[in-house]
Amino acid sequence: MRLKLALAGVLESYDYILIDCPPSLGVLSILSLTAANYVLIPIQTHFKAFKGTELLLNTIKEIKKHVNPQLAIAGFVPTLFSNASQDKVILQALEQQLAPIARI
Image 1 (cartoon, helix red, strand yellow):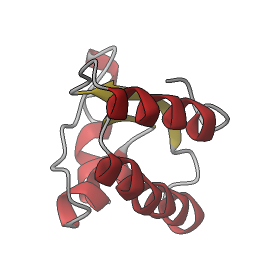
Image 2: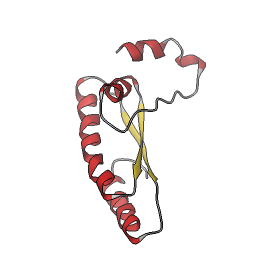
Image 3: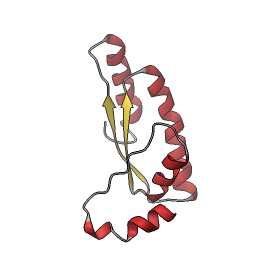
Image 4: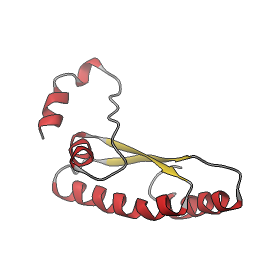
């Protein structure tokens, strides 16, 4: 909650405050999710990244349930896309499975 309190003092000075987090779900990510209003999720168009998104979504769900009920997913941003057939399949799977949650 300290990060949220620290940001509260400067919120009126900014339209947006972006908090960049490491790709792991460690303490820094948990603190950031606790302080955030929205989450913008970059996701590589690779199979392992696609599977790892489920863990992140579960973490966001727990943060909303216990600490920050206002937290919402702003969208997903596909990254590192190449025109390879596997990336196209993963991008299509992302669109099918994640579109009901937020924009892709």
